[in-house]
Image (cartoon, rainbow, N blue to C red):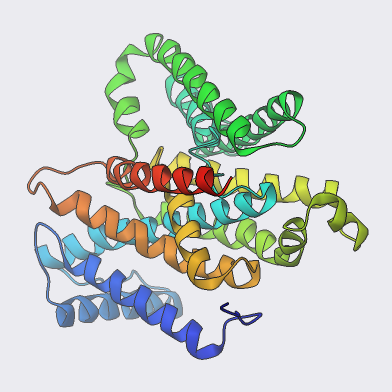
Amino acid sequence: MRVHKERFSAPEYLLFTAVTFGIFCFCVCTGSVSIPLKDTLSLIRDAVCGVIGSWIDHTESVLPEGTTASILLAVRLPRVLCTALTGAALSLAGAAMQGLLKNPLADGSTLGVSSGAALGAVCAIAFGITFPALPFAGTMVTAVLFAFLSLLLILGLAYRLDHSLSTDTIILIGVVFSMFVSSLMSIVITFAADRVQHITFWTMGSLQGKGYPDVLVLLGALVFFGGVIFLHSRELNAFAMGEENAGHIGVNVRRVRLVLLIAVSGLIGVCVSVGGTIGFVGLVTPHMLRMLTGPNHRRLLPASLFGGACFLMLADLAARTLLNPRELNVGIVTSLAGAVVFILIFYRARRRG
C-alpha cells in the first residue's frame, strides 16, 4: 500500500512549477504563427522591462514593436495566461467540491453549477445588467450569484430526496437542473435576438480575445477564493471521515461548508463570466491527480492547481491548432475529453459499489 507524505517537498513544488512553465512556454510559442522560444522569452523580457521602467520613471511604457511582438504580447500571451488561471481555478474548485461532498463525480459542470453561472451571465449580457459602482462587473457578479444559488438549490433538492446525498441522486439532480437552465437560457435568448451569436459562442466556452484586465480578474479571484480553500484543507480532510466525525474533532461543519460553497461558487462564477462554460476541468484533473497524490487535500489542492492549469492550456492549444486555420472552442475539447473520463469514473464507482 502506497504511503503519501503530509505535504509536498520543495523539490516537488519546483518540479510542478517547471512542468507548468514548460507547457506555458510551449503554448505561447505554438499557434498559427510559430515563434521560437528564444524570441518569445526575449520579447516578454523586453515588454516587462518596458512596463517596469515606465512605472519607475512615470513615462509611457515602451513595448516591442512588430507583427511578431503584437501577436505574442497582445493576443497569445494574455490568452494563455487566462487559460492557465481558469484551468487552475476550475480544478481547485472541483477538488474542493469533491472533498466537501465526498463524491468523486462532483464538479461545477456535472452538478449544474456552471450552468447556473452561465444563466446569470447570459441574463447580464442579454439585458445589459450593470451595477452603478461596478459597471464593468455586471456579468461577473450575476454569474457568481447564480452559481452560489444554483449550488444551494441542487444540494437542497438532493437532500430532500436522499438524506445520504448519494452520488446517483446528486448527479441526477444536476442533470435535471442543467436541462432546466438550458430551457431558461433559450427563453432569454429569444428576448435578445440581436445578441444570439455572441451568447451562443460564449456558452460554448472560449478564451479567444481575452486581455490583461481578464488576467487580473482571474488572478484576483484565484488568490482570494483559492486562498480560502487552501486555508480549509485540514477541514476537507476531516470531511472525508463524515460530517458527524468532523464535528466531533472540533470542525464547525455548518460554517466551513458555507464558506467553502461560497469560495467554490465564486471561482466558478468568475471563470464562467470570463471564458464561458468550460466543462469537466474540475472533474478530470482532481480525480486523476488523486490517484497519484492520495486523498490528502494538503497535497491534492496544490497538485490540482498546477494540473488544472496544464490540462486547460493543452486543451486550448489543441483547440487552436487541430483544425488550423479554423479554431474550436476550448469547451468542446474539454467536454470531449471529460465525457470519456466521466464514463470511466462512473463505471469504476458502480463496480466498487
